[in-house]
Image (cartoon, rainbow, N blue to C red; front, side, top):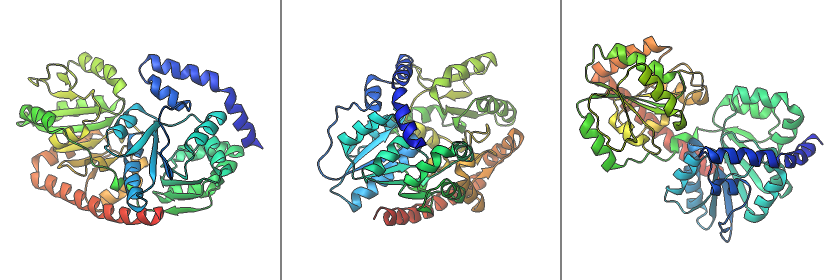
Length: 415
């Protein structure tokens, strides 16, 4: 009954949500096309035959979803893939992925919009990647007898507590999931407690995510300017982590004169705040997006572009996981698997607890508790090339072994 009330109430939020997206459009966080598709207005045509809908909310989930979609096409070559996502960066990634997918923006979970969306696309089955839970979609899929699976499912402690608080909704929503394959034991327990019936633990599918591409022309241009430098990259950084990174540079540069740091913020719209802070602290930096890109006396490169992560990993001796020092749960360390940089992460890797455990167990990376330990670890790796190479070799071996296990598990799940 309460779920039914929620479904009808969601229709009342149409106007304020539309206004919200109009404001996002004004600040360039949406486009006309993204808004139309999020409100279930699409100019794209449904392919004939079986259609499998895969949803990956952001870049990380979309990369996993691409790997899933490729395996589906091998097993079911006549089926078509409808791939939805919620962010512009993920949409651009999917559009450039050279796969024959229909790429759209994920519809807003308003009852009448979801009905229109499902009537138009009429998928044969639906796969959500990781942690998206939407009451209207789940209910209407069940009503239409369309199978819903969640792959690489993850439910954080915070999300679990929030769903428990609204158990009057969650107890009607989570049983609607037909199959749930979790990436860790904690998520398995949480999905079960919230009412999901068919829950199994599988290998984390991030190990089979698409490798990062490297623009060789762009890489060579930057490499020529940095070939005499010792490059360390902080990727997917959050507020305060950039300042911490600048502080450890001051310490390390006293001993390592040719040190160079690259900072890739998690959210590119924060770049002005970062540059303001660096200007205030009188730090020499360069922006990647500057028209006359030339490194002279700068000590930092601040990346304000999309899709170039592979370039900077290839340039680096060490990669430091952002979000792991700022209590944001960390970001995906598997991104570096195809490159020759050692991994360091902080004390907050809750979003990748199983992967962190594997890395520590196989001595394939390093966990540090604070900035002081980070200074010592970076210094140690830069001074000990054998340790750096051996750590990176172990990490690649770990990822390779997990890759084949994940592939095998995924095929059995899809079949």
